[in-house]
Length: 292
Image (cartoon, rainbow, N blue to C red):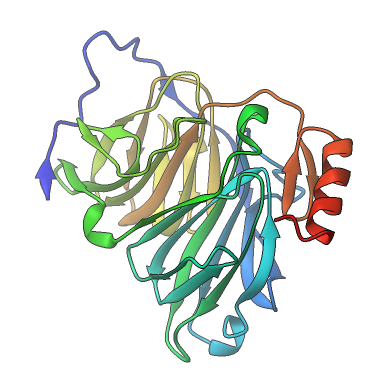
């Protein structure tokens, strides 16, 4: 683990982000009946440009996840899977295959189209993690598909202050850069751990949309109790160049995610995300004709 200062770079304007909206996820199921909680992509928060969907899956009951996500298509965006516990194997129609284990990340760029599956490689025990959908700009929607499969040991962990540490998946924190390359939205994706009483100031690119999601304990985001988030709360952040996160009542773990908004029209139809209804119609035709 490396150590870095939690101070902002010199020249920062010092505008601290506050929570402008708190969202609770909704239970749902997807794939072949996998039970999960949908946090972005539901009536309370349809999307947060460029983020289209955020699901948390967490269960130690095999019946909740064992059927997995059999082969299904994607076009026009990226899927990001971050595993906290369990084992999931992915494969696609290009012959690629890989294993996601606890602490690993897969950043898949669907681009012009791919068929893939995500199936549990366990029959009992805890399966826990997140899947995030990140939109692609119009110029990149028909790019060639690609994977970034990132093993746990490739994700740097940084101690920012007493009782505060982060795993840096994407972006730059304290001079430590995450392994993900995603130029289209220049994302930040970190996993923050706070001990009881710890506090940290995290830089966030000023023009990026950003959110935090608490998945263990409780956290205060921003300057006051209006930003108090419990386990399962997502806080949409106002604009600014930093965010202060504290754990005044209990230890906390949360993800902080930010991305450059695309400010483009969005046309969604299930696993397809394009810019116009006409492009969606073409996508459906391409899929049915076997052109993925």
